[in-house]
Length: 433
Image (cartoon, rainbow, N blue to C red; front, side):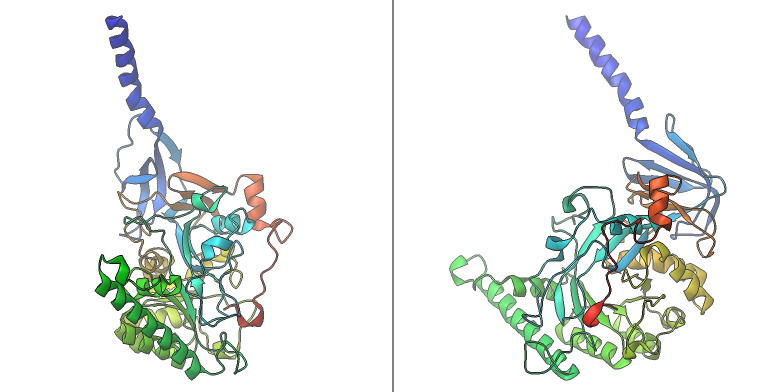
């Protein structure tokens, strides 16, 4: 019996390397754009258990690994969309101007074909946000666009155990309403309401700190103020919808007053105040394709914004604001920006690593480097060519989109019927871009 036990143990141990190797994949012969360094011709990316373990031109393929030959293809990191509305998110309502306690996680339909559209566009991580029709419409959620049946399958958990996400705020035209109700009627009143709420959050934080471990001295729990304390403490990023140059400066002024660094979203007139944005240290996420339309405050939106902000030293990223830009067309944003003066390297960086930094996930995603999540896309050609297609999308070493699959191709190329459950989300009442 002892001999039999030893034989069984030896057989199990002998099988372990093969089992481990079965989880190893080698993507070979592709033109690899790692973002972290220069492009690699005939490069290899080795993935094990959802993580990248090696990238380079002379990488040895581990014995027993599954080899995927990508000759003639281009591989680059998965795209990061810092501002999306796929899967029907919603949060605050007209009952108040600010809803920091409303959590968009409670309203997302992850079985929506919007998720699949984003996968078809090469997006592997997205910041899903409520609309911008309120000064503060709620808490956003950062999702990995894996395949799954519930929201839990898409969540990103931070090292401290928190679920990754931010706060959505807005100024300018969108949150303005008729004066006298719960909503502001002027830009100045908008800023005043925001300041008042942050002052309450400061006071709440001070009371919590003074109470220490003495529960009897703590103020009554306030979910709204808790979320804003996270902003003040640098645990939650404010994603601030803003267009006009004066509105951008207002955002920077408020952020400086309360000691946080926002991500500036849209910045249609960012090219007018590029030096001021650079001086503040705030990153800017811009939209390159503005459709189906905009508003007067976006009349000076320009394709040159990316290049101007780049030259000023701003960390520039891109977003879809889907459906403003269809997620399937996201990669074209980089090409349009380069055509208008942005450098090629920074445009590709903007699609990947810049967004990762804005979401505080740059240690996990954004580049093809050993130790990072195996999130990448396989392209038919150069990423800046209008003729290039996303052929495959991989999230953590699992293929979530394959253009050669008829069902996936239907999602990538079809119209509203192909998208089944997702009606066109027209941004009514000023709640879109």
